Amino acid sequence: RFTFDTVYRAPVVVGAVKQSLEAAFDIVHHSSARGLGEHEAFEELQRAADAEVVRVMVEVLQDFALEGNSKYEIAVSYAGVLDGLLEASAVPMDARVSVRQAFAKVEQNRGSFAKGGNLWLDAQLQKFPWGETILQKLQKLRSVQIQDKGLDEQARVLEEVMRGSERGHRAAERLLQVAELVQAILPSGVSMDPHRIHLVIRPALQLHRYSGGLMIQGGIATPKQGVEVLATGGRYDPLIAALSKGRTSGLAAVGVCFSPERFAVDKYISPAANAFASATAYQQAGESSPGPGAFWGGAASGALLDARDW
Image (cartoon, rainbow, N blue to C red; front, side):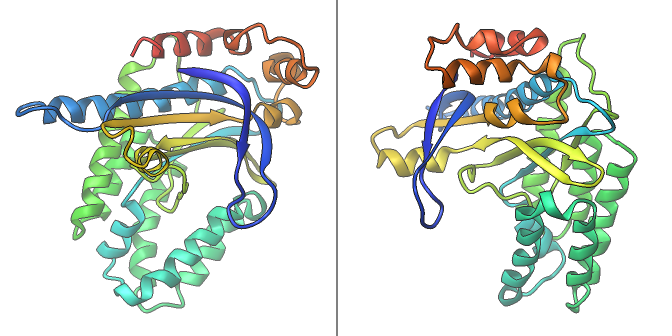
């Protein structure tokens, strides 16, 4: 399904409920194999749905041309990657909270850290006796990212640095499978320009609403101002189970939501390509919307229509 509508978000800790516009795309499917011999088919469905969500984000962001030297950054991770990294680095259980907090600070302040985030994180890790091991593993991943290697090559490096952690290796393996599928299902007319859109694996990416597997975040990476987040998504099977209290058992979902309001005012997006600016105006004026498809131009429109056929 895909929608363009007003949504209401509860505060994480305290505060008022937040009202905003959201353009969302989701794939819902059965959450378990039904019968002997169906497990492989179920696993394949999960991977394909995850890859389709990544594909949609790639195509949508590419449809919004950028000005200047800024580029889109699409970061992906998988539940278990960060824990696997710490396990593979032989970090004691009672010390992992401190390490997670350091990673979380960089993630939560990515917009203000800009390029200094890695330097700050590295300095914090060096304070621990096993910090050098983590840094060596992170540097291997960063090196292929600096060379603009594809998501599949990054996932292979992640698999390598996860040796010693069964959970981490499984998560890296799933990321690799998704990355290979993304490349396979991108239309022939869509190529990812590394100068305009960059797919990266961020081991510490944590999106609390998306704790069921894949996590994905898209935004504009600028030379001096860090990353401006425009979209987030991932697999939210646990959220469905928690909210439904068992009434919708057997369902799983993966999706991504874009913030039209952020697109509409972003100074790095070319005004001529900013379809969300007019879409937001429709909603704010209280006028009837011409339909979700009107807000997704070019390749993005085709991606959404194809995805509805799942």
